[in-house]
Image 1 (cartoon, rainbow, N blue to C red):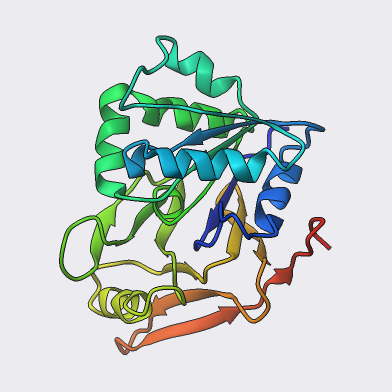
Image 2: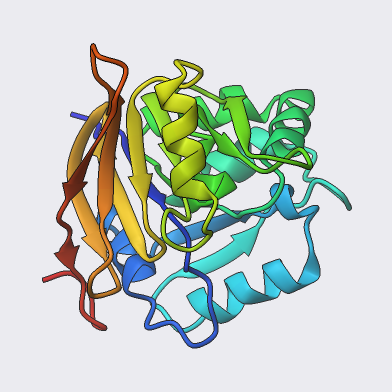
Amino acid sequence: MILKQIVAMGGGVLLPDSERALERYILSCSGKTSPRVLFVPTASGDAAVTVSAFYETYAALDCHPSHLPFFRRTPADLRTSVLSSDVIHVGGGNTKSMLHVWEGWGLVAILQEAWERGIVLCGSSAGSICWFEEGVTDSVAGELTRLACLGFLKGSNCPHYDGEKERRPAYHRLVGAGDLGAGFAADDGVGLHFEGDTLRAVLSAREGAAAYRVERGDDGVVKETRLEPRLLLRTGAE
């Protein structure tokens, strides 16, 4: 039986001083001894600093890292490049622009095939909300808004819940107004591990950080339920 897995993270990954706890957990989800990890930095425009941070992070772990460019020379056989991976890690940046680039290159259908084949999908910020039906985005200048996404996972998503001060009030505003459906928010350093459409686990690389279920009640009042995570240690999951 093939297990479809997505680890959606609030933020705080691919950092030089990170203990790499969430990244270690993601590698363990692949079930491989030394998995092949493909980084997709489209949302940052393939920024060199983002790509370097990915390699610096994953080079310290037991895996084989590579990345998929769309703003330089893109592989001719895109499908083979993606489906030969064990883990696909999507970076942060402008989610709306990223989704348009992916659509133009036909990557969306390939990612869905990868997911259905059991390749682990993950990411933070843009790399988190993209997997849901919709999410809170700063892709457009001004106040945070709703963005329709891929819909691999049901509901909505909000990353950086404690990392950016406008995130929580914006999510409450959008859900309360009915502009966004119910969903999940994650603090920086927190991951939501889904198997299929089911939330299997909440993991945290930071003490005190958490995830939240956010929904609108029949009375129109937004309800926020804290989801306590399992704390990850430097060497992996407990």
